[in-house]
Length: 518
Ligand code: HEM
Image (cartoon, rainbow, N blue to C red; front, side):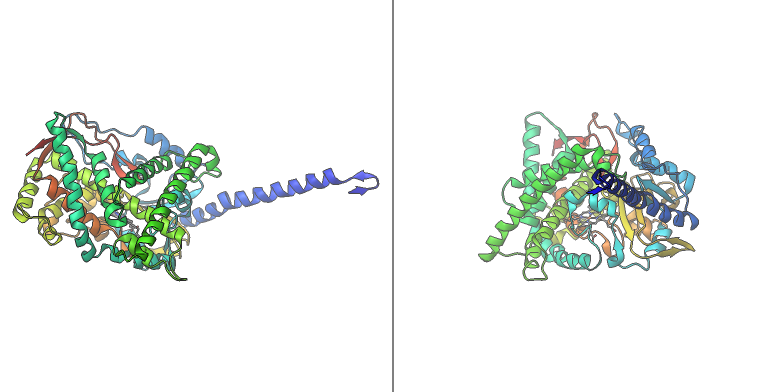
C-alpha cells in the first residue's frame, strides 16, 4: 500500500498490532482483575472480610508459605497421635478463621472464594437453593477437566439432574446385594496375601496402599465388570494424575498453565490415556450388551441411557467412568485406612467390633442383609468420618444472588465449605471434640450430638449429597467383617501422623500397621 510514494504497510502493521495488544490487555485485565474485583467489593460491602489479596497471586503466597511450615504431628508412641488436625491440614484457614471468623473471603490467584465453616450460615445459604441451581467453581472445572471432565460432580442444571437420575439406581439395595459376594471374595484374597506375608516373617503392612488396591478392584469389578488386572493400570494413572494436579501452587493465577507447563502436559497426557482406556471398556461392553449381557452395574446403567438422541454422549460416558472410578475408590479407601488406624489406636473398639462380627455373622457367609446388624461398626464409621473426613471440603458456585442475614452473596460466587473445620469445632461438639468417641452417635445416630445439623456433613449436603454413600457403607462393613476376625493390628513405630489434603484426606506418610494373624 502506497501514499505519496511512502509504503504504509509497516505503519498499518504497527497500528493493528498495537490495537490488538490494547484490546488483549483490556480483556485480560477485565477478566482477571476488574470482574473479580467487582465481585470482591460487593462481598466486602456486604460485610464479609478476609486476608488482603495481592495481584495476581491472591492469597496463594500465604497458603504455600504456611503449607511448607505445616505442623507435622509425628508419633513414635500411639498415645502422641492427635486428632486435632485442622491446623495441620489447612494452617492458613485456621489462622484466617482466628482473624476473620468462620465466614470470610480469600483468593486463589485472581478468583475470590467465600470460605464457610459456620453451619448456621451454610444452612441459611443453602436453604432456598435446589440441587439443580448450584454450580461448581469454573476454576476447578477447567483445572480438573482431565480427571472428571463433565462427570456428575462437575455438571450443573438440567444436565446434573439427568446424570444423577441415571446413576442413582446403580447404588440401590438390590444392586449392592448383588455386589456382596465379589466384595467378600476380593477382601478374602487380600487377607490371604496378608497371612502369607505374616507367615514369611513380615508383619508390617502399608494399610493405605492395600486399601486403595482393594477398593480399586472392588469398583472396577462391581461398577465396570473389569474381570482382569487391567484396572490396575488405570488406577495407577489416576493416582499419578491426582499427584500431578496437586503439584501446583499457582491455580487461579493468570496464565498459570504456562508457569507449570510440565504439569499441564503431564495431566493432559494422563487424561487422554485414561479416556482411551475407558473408551475401550465402553466399546467392549457395548459388544457384550448386544450379545445379551445383563447391564445392572454402573457402566451398564450409563450405557443403557446412552442410546437414542437424548442419551449421554460417548465423551460424557467416559467422563462419568473416570468420575466414578476415582470417586468410588479413593474416598472409601482412605475411610478404611483411617478406620484401621483408629482401631489400632483403640484396641477396645477393635475387640468390640471383632466380637460384633462374630455375633452377627459368625461362621456364615456374609450376606448384604446382615450388614445392618453391625451397629457398633456404624458408630465407628461415623466417628472416623467425623475426625478424618475422606472429603475434607465441598465446593459450590452460586447461580443466583443469595442473601444471608442481610449479607449478599452475588451470583457466580465461589464457595468453599470446610468440612474438617466444622467436624473439629469445639463450639459444635464440646470439650471432647478431639477424642475418638464412637459412642457419641448412640443417642444421636445422625449428628453425633453436634449442636447444629449442618455441622456434621461427611457426605456433603442437600440434593448434591454423595451418590455413592451406600456403596461405601457396604464395602466398608464387608472389608472390616472379613479382616477383623482374622487379624489384630497395632500402630507401627514407623508411622508418622500427618493427614494431608490431595482431593481426599490422606495419610501423607502412608499407614504402616503391625498385623498379627488370629
Ligand atoms: C467415605 C466415602 C465417601 C465420602 C466421605 C464421600 C464424600 C462426598 C462429598 C463430601 C461429596 C460432595 C457433596 C456435596 O457437594 O454436597 C461427594 C459427592 C460425590 N460422590 Fe462421594 N464420597 C464417598 C464415596 C463415594 C463413592 C463410593 C462414590 C461412587 C462410587 C462417590 C461418588 C460421588 C459423586 C459422583 C459425587 C457428586 C454428586 C453430585 O454432585 O451429585 N462417592 N462425595
